[in-house]
Length: 182
Image (tube, rainbow, N blue to C red; front, side, top):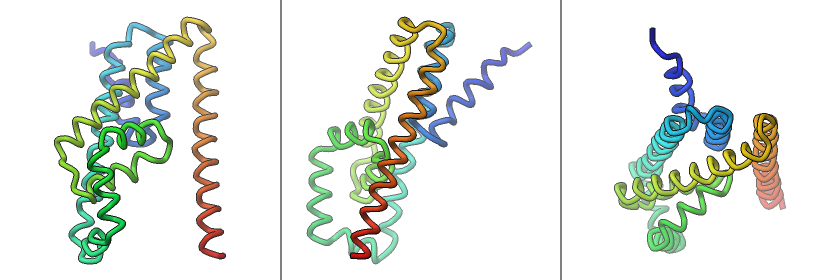
């Protein structure tokens, strides 16, 4: 009979396509709760996180099929921003990895600015590895301290992270709307 863990691993792999932070925290929490799954869960979530990120580059790259998008890319301030992103690519991608709501716009911008795709992929992998490593270390460390209560604690942390992300999105939107009105 086949081990049913593959269904769990499949869900973990596709989790980042839905919501990255929640998927990584859930995978790390599961790993902390049942250490027998640790190495497999870590690499499955890392693979899912990597693949869920690298395709976003092509959204920005595809924007150049539009003459309006190409004209916008040639504006001075956009060209200046492109240069900054290219010169500081690792720092930009590392910052975006750890700042909620920053990933998708930065990854799309990398495609729009035509950052080298192989270099983009290497840096995305490195930032995903650091992020997963940090979250797994945190969850396993908390698991050692709090034991069986770790699941409830991690759910609470996940709710707080989601609330902070939603609040920051709401504040940004309100500011943007206020500027548009005023």
